[in-house]
Image (tube, rainbow, N blue to C red; front, side):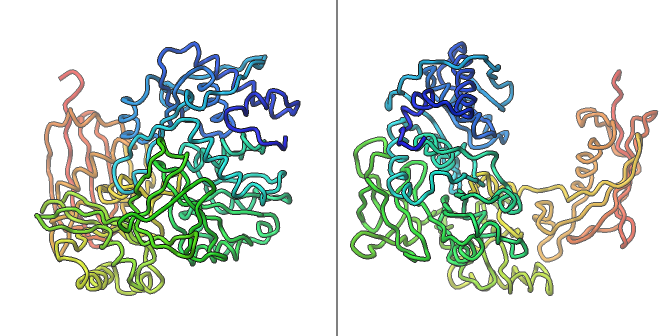
Length: 557
């Protein structure tokens, strides 16, 4: 189908198609429609990995008069918070509603009411806790129409869609589900997580790639990108500005300058650019009006819930008659011991260092109170310093570079160095992910040999572990209580030991040598069922570190 269908009328138009894929999709949408119609409650959370099945579920829910809720992920804290937003769960959520196959597809697919069909999604939580955002179909349809007006003419009708982002977020929902259905184009298959998968999926027909800065900024040089360059006709990126170097790499590897779409869950799409043609200048999407208000970008469009000006948290400057450039987000100002510290300023100062490729900071609770922790991706010189001189030298260099720009209380107290920042399926680095980096208490474990009663492992003691906090500044060591906690936490992974609640005492406990960051430690475990005791030894090339027995209460005690 080649005509513009619109989101609200897509199902009615598809029902007139004789294409086999349309029939399959309509059958699944019918199954979901019937499942939701038979279920009590109006608000239904949906999580499904398959794009086609997900689309069938949300359209089935809408046609059954349900309000759709889209969780961003399935982390335990996400699911806990989800309970206050949904009456029921569907798809791949725990005990989720399922839609059994049906032999026939519904014949009646009236156009959805743009104001009655509704949806809740969540902000990424990249600068705070995720917030619920309600959308009417009218807003989504207006945005899809803007995308088609801006980019539709340049996309071949036969192009296949490949994606590295999730449809559970507004960007993936629009680009991978609603826009293709409204424009009569094919939806993508499974989300591709790795660059190798993208290259392998390119084939020999035109391809449109929907991706994110997190993916495009890490394109490996070793891959053979020739097949991709031959077929990729457009690359989209959203979720954050794409660094110039990453845009250049994408152009070199894929043969296309990425079309960056700027916006947010709250505002919808605002503007777009291609660095190869517009450098830093953003051009508003069709139907989006913008102005500057006290130095901040303000926008007005049908993508918003009301016909009012929305002031963004982004500073901007005019650039030419119709464009603007972004000048950074409003400072995230926090108080540390009554001192005002800008997290944005700390990040900017870190990024200004030639030792740093990428950096994010987050507040964490330490023994001394609330402090800043920094997750850093070293640039070439920083990685070389880390390899040659060690972690302490790199931290000292970064702290020295921050000294003139940041109050001493704003200097990071915890550091995490990695090849890349963690990101979710939308390519966003959330505060929850950053905090998880600094909550790590267990070392990396490599399990070796063992049997029903014994287990052996190698523990890699990373310098970033939270157990080093306060033990001791300048000479960090693993405290004894942390070593016992490691044994108690790791043993159940291999041995049938009782739960912690049945702990009685520690016998023959010895601490013989300190464990320092960077060590590789051997852990030997033995379960003694007749004594209800777990024997353990921690040793390394430096000698013995700790040993003892952990005694548990028996079942019938």
